Image (cartoon, one colour):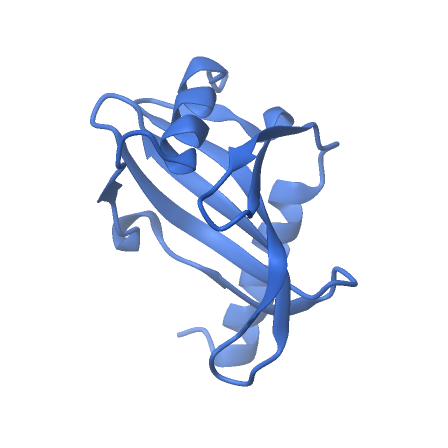
Amino acid sequence: MVNRLGFASLIAMSLYAITSQASEWKSIGTDDTGNNWSVDRASIVAEGKIVRSWTKIDFKEQQPYPPNGELIKHVLSVNVVNCDNHQIGVKASRLLRVDGSVITAHEDTDSNIQWQTVAPDTVVEKTMSYVCVNAKKQK
């Protein structure tokens, strides 16, 4: 059984590995509260029916992190998309301060991803559509 420190290290290493390639951020749009959504084009990879990519949300105004009130400026997440079913889930995420340092991070196993149907005419739908159109097959 992996202890908490070992598990935290494993999450940190896997998040680092996903982000170690050069980023190509593409602005997708702004949500109804003025937050800007972007997708890292270089990270888009199809694995069967599922497409994974990094998504970044830049908050218009910093948001407090509920447990401790620290201010969040950006969210980086590895999103998984089922293009056929119009569903999206979050595989991993990082909440970042204005200086880019990490407030907290988490990663779920594939079996624990919580899938949600994407609402039409939203920035999430635009993000999903962009990822599905630009998916690269994993070799």
